[in-house]
Length: 247
Image 1 (cartoon, rainbow, N blue to C red):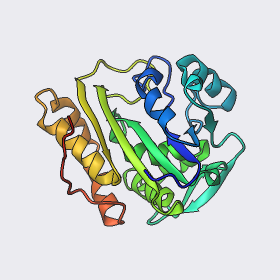
Image 2 (image 1 turned 30 degrees about the vertical axis):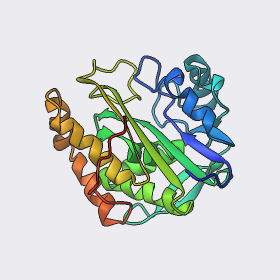
Image 3 (image 1 turned 120 degrees about the vertical axis):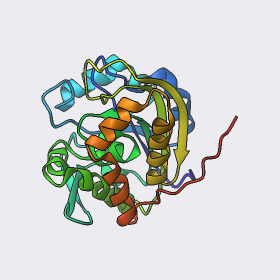
Image 4 (image 1 turned 90 degrees about the vertical axis):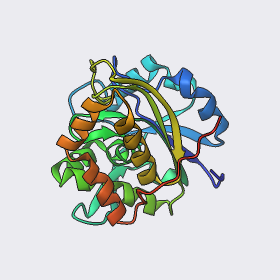
């Protein structure tokens, strides 16, 4: 990623007890990015991160404040970005304009509404304000996630890079305090400038894994592949990719 100004590194701070990406795993990477802050938004459900005060307690408890400054982007309100399709508007934190580019650092895992959670979910739901999350959930959820991600990418001129960490792959997302034990433990780390290709590659690795049957069933039962299809339809990226392995 070329440095063009302040960078927001989007993570999920995770509910206590969840499989969030640990600071000791991502800390060295975070510290190599100049002018960077970890960025998050408050949640729309009644758990530990629903308001800024409690969210900051979780951030301290999980140790994210020891590796970087953490900006809760909707701490002081929200703003609207134009979005394609039926979503029309995407509500993000009011601190969004402080950043010239974003590194989307995601824990790839299952999700009991979306089928799976990766780069696109980390941008769409993850970067939406608390009420913006409700707006996406209240729209055609599967399509709206793609449209929200496209709105964020368009707003920063496509200056985004995406990393998916495929470890402790539970069927449940990091918003769950007591997730089911992982079906798959470690598939590696994937990165791309194209979030669609990245999430598709991760899904393909799940489908090819001998222990991936339950997650595959969940993805298909919840129409998770439709998200990838719609992402391609609206020009967010391409599902076709070439997987290059690095030693």
